[in-house]
Image 1 (cartoon, rainbow, N blue to C red):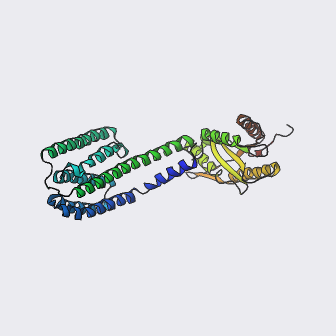
Image 2: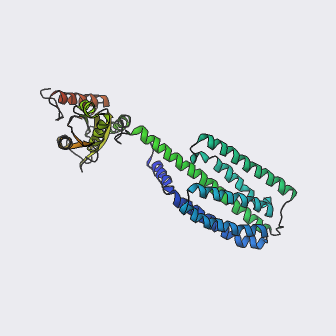
Image 3: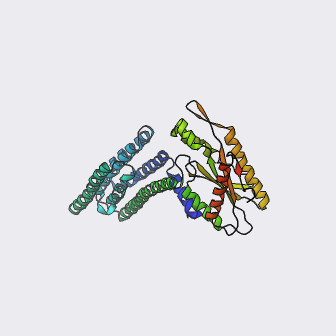
Length: 371
């Protein structure tokens, strides 16, 4: 089970990319600001080629705001990658290896590892991954060889500026790598949450499924003390097979979905509830007190809740392709006794449900007469 702190971190991470466009706008604004800061530095260095290209870079990032507005995010990503790649090459050739522009190769290699996050086709992903990785590695090696033979195009007589640039580039590289890993981690969180949701929820009704309810009930029973209360109700839609045979399975699915809505939000200020699809046309509600209640009060509240559900179901109809399907339901309500296990509670609820179905249906049974 996740701790509250882990869940909070997860939610904060997921919220970062809740709006991908906004995130992309922020990244673009940051890159534009960085290149604006480069203007006086390149001017002091009198590095004419990279100084002029820096103005082109500024223009690219201004245009990227329009790209983000009108084009897919992938176009924006491709544009800034191309700009940074060219800037890295020109910066290294102009000012030398020690200035640190070659370090952006590390960013490219890390980002290439996460291409699968954005590409659905495995074949395309593999081809692009190897191609881009080869291009980056080749650029790194060629730049290293070039700067051995030609250390720089513009002589820098200010060691302080070399150090400043090296630090700036190192910081930016680490920030980019952190951003790439963050994007991947957030996507992993989203995929994990989706898989968890599919594993623990019934896809048709959206309710908790049987497996998840077993886990939840185990947890709640483990916390029940001698003076605490807990109860379950198992619901069964009456003559559900007849609905499927008469109207078809799609109509049956609509009936199940409609019935599931009747079990959501049925708690009161005194009673909390958790609902699940138990299997087929069977559903389950778990009841637990939200304040201190006597057993008599607890039972009365729960019977009242389940009776309201029964009346609501029998008074309503399911509309399906112009046909109005009338349904009813039977429920067995069992109350937990301290020391009992989960299986005994389920067995009792099943017996009560079976009794109700054998003796008229469309009723709530919490005890068998004369038993």
